[in-house]
Length: 128
Image (tube, rainbow, N blue to C red; front, side, top):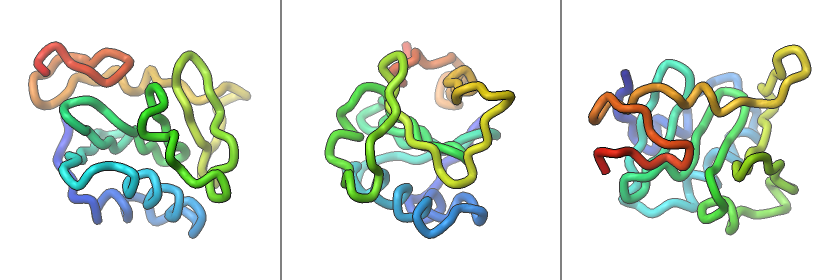
């Protein structure tokens, strides 16, 4: 299940984030249109633009499908984003790899609360 969040709730979603983490989350959210819808599940928060996920906000990293919403981010703040299997991601100071593994997007395989179906890897859903 998920619940809706406000933009401000997303920006303060984790109190363990460093100042730099908060600045990166704020920049990632600030790059999105004012009409963005935010929600959280038990393991991540996300932003939807026009029915598609623009950015996943996990406790330890940010993740973007494709490049549309990560292309305009300030490289002075973000540095180079890691890219794997079409996903760009940036670890935060709270990122903790599990036994040397890289972050997995399998945690995003939860049903979307709007229709209870699992969205595709690119954030689209059959109900969109």
